[in-house]
Amino acid sequence: MVISIGLEGSANKIGVGIVRDGEVLSNPRRTYCAPTGHGFLPRHTAQHHRDNILKLVKQAIDEAGVSISDIDCVSYTKGPGMGAPLVSTAVVARTLAQLWNIPLMPVNHCIAHVEMGRQVTGADNPTVLYVSGGNTQVISYMNQRYMIFGETLDIAVGNALDRFARVLKLSNDPCPGYNIEQLAKQGKKFIELPYCVKGMDVSFSGLLSHIEGTAVKMLAAGDCTKADLCYSLQETVFAMLVEITERAMAHTRSKQVLVVGGVGCNLRLQEMLAVMAQERGASLCSTDDRYCIDNGAMIAHTGNLMFVHNMDTSIEKSGITQRFRTDEVHIAWRD
Image 1 (spheres, rainbow, N blue to C red):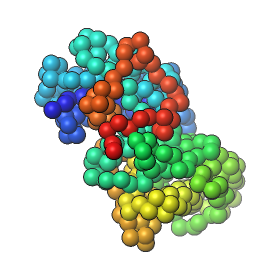
Image 2 (spheres, helix red, strand yellow):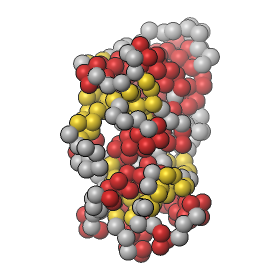
Image 3 (cartoon, rainbow, N blue to C red):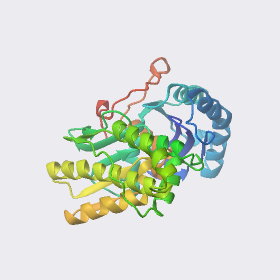
């Protein structure tokens, strides 16, 4: 029996989770919300994390009903992510590991999303669509590596949605993507937008520039509503994602598709993936916002898997990296 505490702070969420052999014992988190019309800056986000992380550590231990002596390892997000928030989180992880005299596990954020999704849904060997504010990848497992079949060539899909929310002056509470999703449900008019799929990869920057440039004009002229624009943007970018995911499933002959990451909470995206999967005789595996959105439990769970295979790091090597590829990690815990 292995108990791991995980610290996640790669973006605007700071979370601490405690997991025992795949069972989530606690998973509290807090979110930094920037003012409407603005994104979250690294220094403000890092300060938010520093202000909240110790409270979350105490809360997680209390909710889990464990003592410090029960915890076998400290896991933290090594990357990818924003530099300042990652450093703030890693400093606390290193300190706890030394205070408690237990091993330190440096976890890849992307791998943690995948492994948590597999754990919660029971997916065996799915094709994975990982979509968030910082990452957009289609992933499949092979020979103890998570291989990237396709990805964004520029910005992540979540970043595109967030930036368009700023154009419309939508609130960042609880998050811009969620507010776009709710507004899109009221959309009635589809506006054709650039559709940019290049082989197995996608590009969102041109589409975003186009809709940013035309949205204000169309709204002023009464040609559409904010809801129409949100609806059209969602339908277009999600269709692009479903297309490359289906192509990866065809190549790997996969019968499961797992969607993870913050954008994976979007019910319209889940609906489109489910239709595609059903037409292929496959199934969709998805989770809710407890595990799709960045959280400490996913770091703790992956750290747990690493602990069993002696993949800890020394304090001297326990840095962070803003660019940490999914396919760089040796997946020792899978055959």
